[in-house]
Length: 177
Image 1 (cartoon, rainbow, N blue to C red):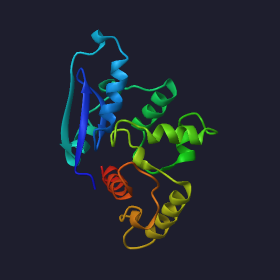
Image 2: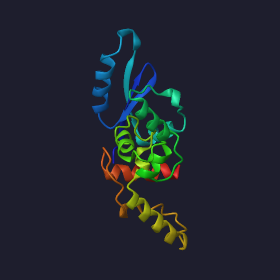
Image 3: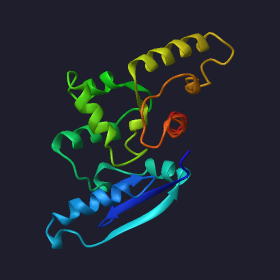
Image 4: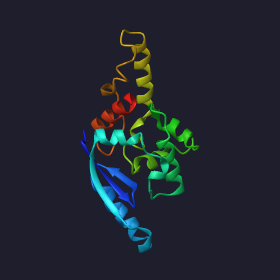
């Protein structure tokens, strides 16, 4: 699991959160296309996963400076406003107002620049979500009453830039908030 996250801010607004500097290079290319007077200060800092999770509850949409198409920004805003539970890609595409555009929505989810805060980790394959719901229904009838979350280690949570173990851990932490 990733233990440190790199936050890049432009003029005091968060532009990316990532486990490496890949997003920083992409941001630099986008900033290079802007007029020189449109950016004053660019900073990076490293935070722990616990610090990132604590920060998540304090941010508003206005705290971000994002570079994306109108479509991508809409998908990212929908991610930011999600209720903390698991969603299939088709469910999430419908929430974005684009039920027929699952692939385009999934692509926007995949290039989400704000890890954890825009919880792309909560979007998983439909088959996995169905299995998680089935497991939870069975668990509800046991002594555990579903408190074991979704037995995430037994389902495919889908692709994630930082690996499935990190995605599972972020899901667990996000759903326990």
